[in-house]
Image (cartoon, rainbow, N blue to C red; front, side, top):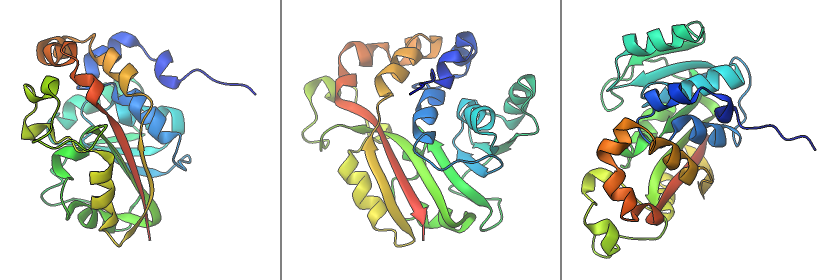
Length: 237
């Protein structure tokens, strides 16, 4: 059987270092996408796309049409980046606050994905029901979020994590996310799992200037041993 090197490994490392805002979102997206039925021409909403490397993966590797939506990164900046790669016809950059008005037609997207962003706005009982109308029947919502590898709570956190943890981390274990998504009757929960690419994605991020400024003390203290990336996939009924 022929195996192919990951698309992410072939990408320009300097470009990725300049565009990573956390653990390498292109690598995480590539692992997630391998579990999803993505076909050329699909319309995919990439929520919380950051500087767009998750969108780039979907457009280049899968020939999908991607709507790259973010609240923090200017769509003009992203548009310039996509154009430099010749992807201006495949990726639509947008400024979207998903907690406010969502500027799309109902039943428009084949899939919604979110990489290392959903935890900021989706850890509640209303977000899935808010997003579902925009997905076609039989379409998918798939997210990758950081989460604890055990059922830790603020009361029983390991000491190495305690000194860094704040509620803004939004870290919950698999069971917490599973329970939350199972409350939404409009989806069939098809995947809840810990991902394989977390460590390598973090190692790659740790080579960036942003990580050196923000995350070195956390990771060097060993906090990374207590969390992973969690993938959830729901199919619209």
